[in-house]
Length: 250
Image (cartoon, rainbow, N blue to C red; front, side):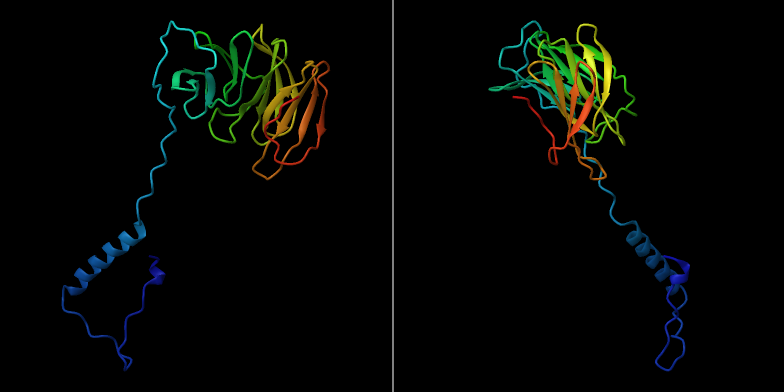
């Protein structure tokens, strides 16, 4: 309590001061009042933050030497920093640590999965269920963190021939970029500016064009579609409504 907020001495109806308390009583009451005041100011202890989400337990693990059956689901588990292999009938059967806060993933015909994480693009051999590479982004995205607004890769897609991967990279506080990866060399070969928070990416069937959706930002700004000519790297904006997240090309 602020010293200036102390109550004035009580008065009697006649205007005089209240009678003095017996010696020692005031001291005892003062101690009790102070204790009550401290308890009221302290209030209840703040609740502990919720624990970091964990991956679902692997209930029926596949043997290390066994291949991955067809029909297995691959799930990017952002809370556990893994790609989880899920049998639709039995549940999780394996998990591979890929990097901080994985988001989108794309599966190639050669059995490799390309996973956009906060740290880079992870390459996972789905047959052996191992991470074989982590390709750093060319674009600076700030500290490696988790959460909805973290920097790093978001949407990702492969070219029809599997020669290139295209990943939308979020740069907190400004526009994102589309990074082009050479899948044989395992390196970024080009970057193209796109809208903020590039949630999803898809590529035309003829491999000539990539389409990137822009997502919600903290200031309430929504983005449309960025159309990228892959031969030239030229980009143009296509207003197409609001709240654009996923995208697929027919």
